[in-house]
Length: 233
Ligand SMILES: [Fe+2]
Image (cartoon, rainbow, N blue to C red; front, side, top):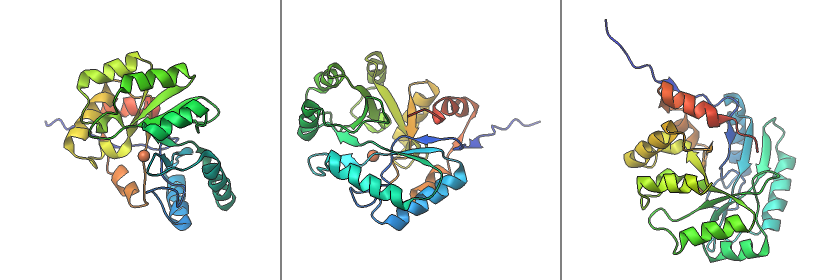
């Protein structure tokens, strides 16, 4: 008798997508309204329940809070489906972010005080720990986007982040191997270890959905993903 490992396709029913670039025409994500609506239509078929739009905000993409709010409200007027939509942002930890932080001018997840941040994939900004401290003492909780993608991080760094109370957000594409094998391995390790507080697609175009659906999880990862699938915003 043979024993087979039955990895199952990822179950996205009830999923809260905490990180996405679906709001059209504001960053390097979706450009056309029709593509945004196509993604949300597919999401509905998959049973995805809530989506947070998190457009880039960085020195090179200086979206304003008011501008994004206006675009979001206009989009809500176009979307007739049943998915609950939220607006936040993905902030690069650069000088523009520090200015917005000082001004208290940040788009947070839901009604809370959680701010989604990212760094370069190759190197941290100087004084990263001081920046984290600054954010927290300013009254915000930190969600670090796709930590598995930061190749400059030692594995021990993830424990330190967790000890600081920083929440970690996994990308579905990391599990799918979209960013390479080493990122995929890190994501599986962190998922299994219970490091993640939430997950997101980080979707930039409709074609990415097919990659997410290729993800197959073993029993341990399936259980770990179920624990972060339906976070409340
Ligand atoms: Fe992103």
